[in-house]
Image 1: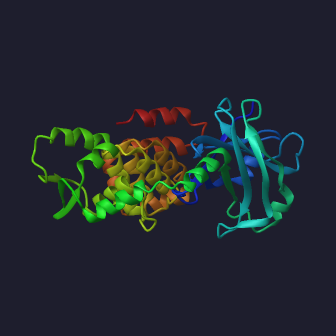
Image 2: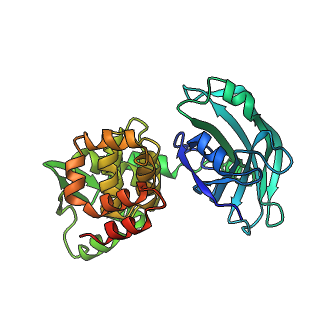
Image 3: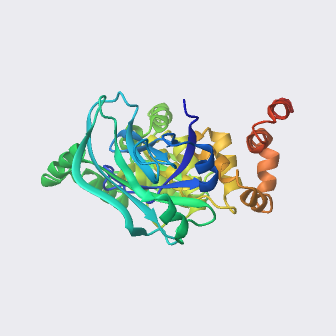
Length: 359
């Protein structure tokens, strides 16, 4: 049985308007090492990612599938393999240094495939020739970067039917928030005042529902003070509650604050969007802060993405020189122990056990 390694996965963008068509970037760090470690027919498996309400993984064969030993093979798999039938189209592309598809290494299939219990995998035995790739300029720092675009077809038809009879509820609720007509709640956040509607907040957040039902006996318009949150974060939180949308101009720092706010008020969709945003924007300047947030609030996908990023010695060194490292070291020492245990060579199992028992 082949040992299964992992491929890092990051969302390219946040297609909030079309949740049934998404693009991801798959990164295979250490192309040469995985090629040496895995035999023909053995593969790497990506982390699961979501499109159209279904989970997917990509299997990557550095030495080709059994029938194509000179090629790189790649397949999209419905996860788990026993899930219900799903119709989908997909494209795989080698990405250049700017993240753009290389036309000669792009494999797109216009046919609609049915992923089922009997046929959970679809893809390409001959994505590219290994020898040709290794002579090209597209294998940078021994890292292979592949784009994967997946379109789930059945739900897209449903979406188009919905567009034929448009539902303006989110737009109308956004107008209601903007106009503040019939607002019966007043929030004070960091010295700023926000007006909102009890029924909307209680419907969209179980935490707001519990808190606001306790306040039903209070008079309409009574002041509610929100602690430990910046006004712009609360404003963005209200905007999502009413409209289901997040401004695309939000930066990584703001995204992290909004993720914490979404967790605080148990707004699952916003948590998913913001966590995916942070997972796809990890660098040496923000990774310490993102890792601290992930550890303190239980964001497992973000934590895993940060730990994979820090598996690189150069990334780890840069993180230790960043402003967030001191806070991470003081607030989350346990996650640093876990990181050290991960980056030690596999043969040092005893040393890993010792590190994980240190308090």
